[in-house]
Image (tube, rainbow, N blue to C red; front, side, top):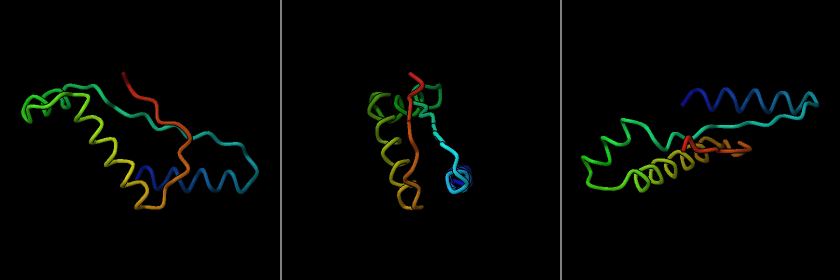
Length: 75
């Protein structure tokens, strides 16, 4: 999870310098790997995507990254 840490630092720095920054992180909730994993786990793609999304948000919070502005889904 190097990317979010770097982008968090960049956003904080730019805001410190006075810029208005909007940070958008795309959530991939539909893709072949996710479909395959859902099939193997006998669950729905939506359920598995929600689980992974929640885990991602928990990981971000654990790293102290709480200033992402938007999380649009691929679907």
